[in-house]
Image 1 (tube, rainbow, N blue to C red):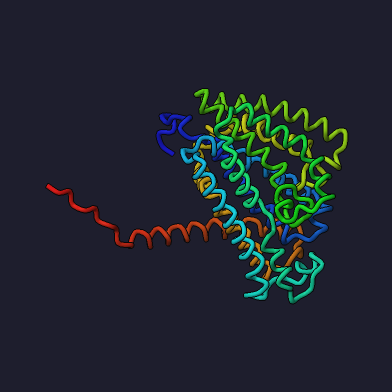
Image 2: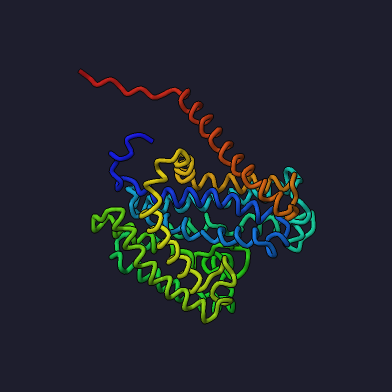
Length: 372
């Protein structure tokens, strides 16, 4: 990196790049553990516990998404609706690639994975549809964009956005309990998530996006620097952290016992923790890290987070045809993590270069001559 000291630190929030890029790298390692490591390794070893703790960094993606959304020039209702629909299509396409293709086309999905659902081969069309409709973080992010754009949340005062995030977080546990008594169908699952067909329901996870959206708008509307943005975020984070810890102390199991379906204490704790960590990164780490050669890799991962997310899941799920499902020891899992990371980044970069080469060879439309 050259002339780093001459750059305007506020033109791009490098701390968000750092947090998002590192999270992508950790994410590949965590998903490798989830799908390949023996269940005893995941539940009964220090290695497994550490990786599961790191895997709870989902809120960092969502807070960063909210901030970036507020800073984006493409913030019109139309742009957000288009992006929301696009993320939904990508999410369901990913499910087809990671589940349906290895089951019906390659016939390589391990029986142990099928049996984890309580099923036997061959799968029925209903079971294949169940897998295709699995609710992942892409579906949640897509629906959240549809909600933010559809209700024009970018047009209301930013404090109301923060209030809405708080209300959703506070009411999430109650709403999930109440919704279990009525059949909201698949849409209800996507919104509230009372079963494991949907891992990331909109409620409460949209609270993290809205918290980031509030902070991004705070920066834009008050013309604050990056340092002031993250300082404000840390103050907000300390409040969220205090309420979250208090709720967890009262009843940890109901608040954080199910990571994917959190209640107020869990989501408040994660939002607060990540806002405080962003301040620490910005204050003590980012400037130094940008001078390290590895920053280019982290920045690349941050810029391509969605496509890397899809690719790593496809590679991991297809790889189960070779490695198996939940079969590896701690050492074998640890050794496989950098392999999966290199595969993901290598295939992604090679595909990007190849696509750029193809596009460069396409004939370009010539501008019509200006009449004299």
